[in-house]
Image 1 (spheres, rainbow, N blue to C red):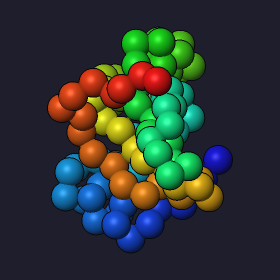
Image 2 (cartoon, rainbow, N blue to C red; image 1 turned 90 degrees about the horizontal axis):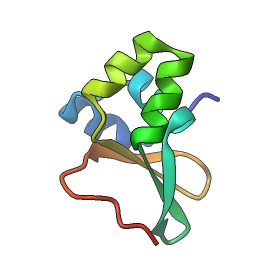
Image 3 (cartoon, helix red, strand yellow; image 1 turned 45 degrees about the vertical axis):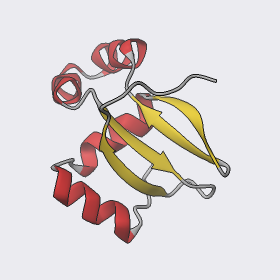
Length: 92
């Protein structure tokens, strides 16, 4: 599933050193939670990293480096922004 990145997301990826392949792995294997205004946040949790490691160990090593990375997806599925988590994702 190829992702559509907004201009804002591309700029943030470059600023924060997050590669498109890492965002693709995040979207394909990560856990999602509602983020308000019908958008969702996707992040790696322990189970998501385990699924990724089972399917693709090489990508899992890269994801381990970026295990605190998140992406916000808009209503249309486009990646709105990406970043590094400094706090836990609220569950609710």
